[in-house]
Length: 319
Image (tube, rainbow, N blue to C red; front, side, top):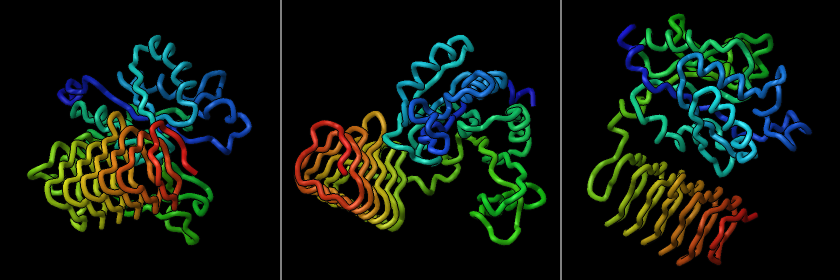
């Protein structure tokens, strides 16, 4: 155990703070939920203080709603605590997996495990116990669960006697478990590296690239770094795709160029990106969006089932 502790030089945590906090309105109409005070202190600050006590030195905040306000209010407190805050900006709230993908550059900067937690949790944070338990069992991830009285209102966790998770069941009508995800977990940065067969390599592939076996890739494509191509997606000849996620059944036509630059481009399910399109910045296409040939898209979000026939030189929301 001593050797493991010695290696943990840069402990990191990812806090998911991208939601709108609709259940706390009207408070959250002017203030993001993680900054709402509990015992005269923002909820998020309680969490950061507890993480610092577990020797966490870097906290990545996956932010979206009122990100600037959050940054302005927390930077000073972080300096006092001696912790580095990194703001990973989501174009829109991306759930759990999205923020992990956006922050992978920071999370995988070392081989040490990292914490992941929701920003609306208040408790006696068991981070030290979580770290010790995680190190002792040697598996890839650990999820903290908590007992509830009415499990039918939640997604429950079903696990074996030794703690190995069997499944997650959303709002079960018959009793199968009364344990739910408590919103705190820990993972190894090597989680995705332990399955190299899932990562693609070969001519034109650079860095981390994940391509579903059912995707179709044309000739002379340049793909990577940090690209995920989903089931049934199609890349025609000559495409250049960097820092992007292509979701299920999307089509990228000949010589299109996508680069998320600082963050990522996301092409939604069954969307079509036309020939010679140049799409960069944080661009998110919803489901079934069509981008006509030879257009320039410089960031923004496009709602589902839209057709784009003119260039978008500045980031905007297209409804």
